[in-house]
Length: 262
Image: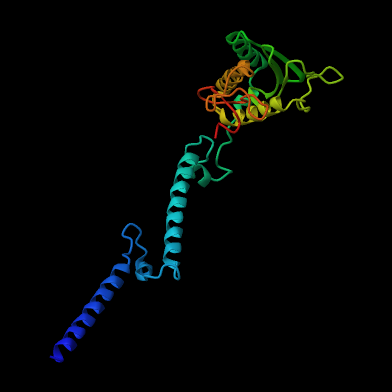
């Protein structure tokens, strides 16, 4: 009669041990199959993750490295699409043997430039373009867009070097009667448009056809005819921080606030 309780107590003790072993085995994690980290994956078997976060840190670094490699590949593909990038063959040719490319687009006759500007002026009735050459062959344009703004465009042949946007009622001339190509606008809204115009010059780049670049830039500039009338296409508001939508999309020409376009 006394042996039976001992056997029962021994069986219950073994049963409790098996339960504890089963509970501990459930705490053991499995190494991730999606991110093979070789022997470092054994660190995930430690049930005390709070005290040994080494594996989770390694896994996070591995994901970050993969993402960095992915974005680097995308950036490399975009850079390879640029027409101005030199190929490996060109870099391998000796500078003495390689014939120098004649800058034919930089020595265009003034009459051809006048014809291009005249055609662009006829394309947009709301825009008036006045061409002058105060310093020889280099052309300077005074673009008046309705009664909204005026733009001073400094050109080198058919390549635009600099743009300054000012209000319609602002003075664009210096004391001696020449176009003021250095002074900024007194209004923040036109200073913003000047910055966006500089960005547009970097976007519209086609050295083989500079007349297309000038026409594309003027088309983009014409979209500011409703600078104070068009709402933002994202937030739907006319003003944000006291400023109208000063950004124009390069493809759709839609209006956005400077913060809403991102």
